[in-house]
Length: 406
Ligand SMILES: Cc1cc2nc3c(=O)[nH]c(=O)nc-3n(C[C@H](O)[C@H](O)[C@H](O)COP(=O)(O)O)c2cc1C
Image 1 (cartoon, protein in one colour):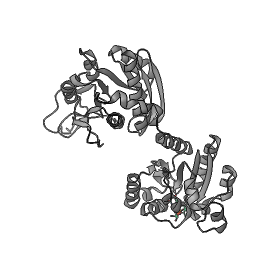
Image 2 (tube, helix red, strand yellow):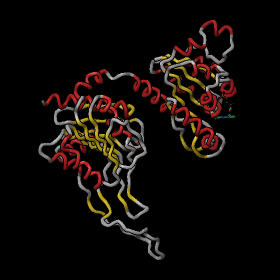
Image 3 (tube, protein in one colour):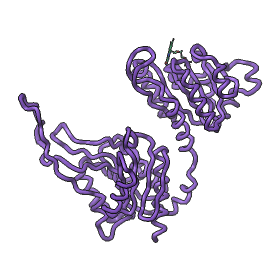
Image 4 (cartoon, helix red, strand yellow):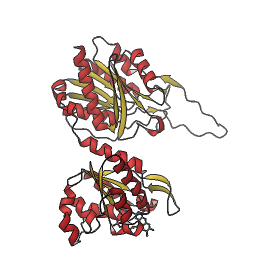
């Protein structure tokens, strides 16, 4: 793959040398474009030695223009990565400015652009920077979240350049997400006219009028599946816990808050569905008697006990019905992924289970994930990829598994 790496004027510019090394080691062809700010921090020669190409740094260099014009250079890469991306360059990109080679290339290309910002924590938090990022994200730029910790300026906070290995993975995921999945082509035939009922997001169990027990589910996986199924021609009903995600108008969305409400909505909708996917993170327990008034802090009372009672097991309930739809559950585990998933598949009499590891911050709240898909007779590992892509692969696997048993 051809990667154009933009390096801007930040203290973290030296870390991009490691990024070039990772790209080259993986067999990618890398060309580096430096801003004049970047050259204040690091010598172009280092990038030239690692990439095997002369560094490009000038928009108005007659020799360089003769060799390969900036328009030609803009067409060369499969992906453009800017790391570190300075606050200044983010502002220029947002404005659509083109007063140096890097920003001109970004305007003149139709290739995906990944930004890895790095800056002082106050520069990062500044409303101007945040507005610029929001605008760029809306325009389709892929933006990595910077790391947190001690900064070169001596302050502690958010704004560190993500680790080169993470920028490397994000680049590969971005490019992979743009490749069409060959199996996707067969999907519309299977899903057209099928009714998919899917739950997504967390449930909130109220303690009193202002407090609740929730969980970290972002709903992104379930929403991605709902969108992909709708694209494939399925009729989709999405029962969702409280999340701030939007869905296409073709999807019938039912918003609920608690596990009990989700259960009632599933009971109302399951009978007409062909496939039921339980992607929601449903609370296992709820408060037995939520207080009608806010619980007050009482002097001298150091402990407070909340009484919890078990919630209905929604996916198990659907799997017990006759006739029943094809039932797909999710298992988020922190250890022994396959063992626990196999156990859940059998114990709840599911047709399929999608297991994902949520140890070390993986899975929840992320845009990408890895899944292990299991049925009684089949197994498939879906490697780390954006949830939008995993959703399609999952729908392919469901279609294949149902077709096999028919
Ligand atoms: C020592 C030093 C460190 C800097 N580090 C950063 C940084 O980490 N991130 C950033 O956005 N700007 C940083 N700046 C400011 C940029 O270099 C400056 O805004 C420059 O105009 C960026 O231009 P460019 O994006 O065209 O490279 C730093 C400046 C100095 C003097």
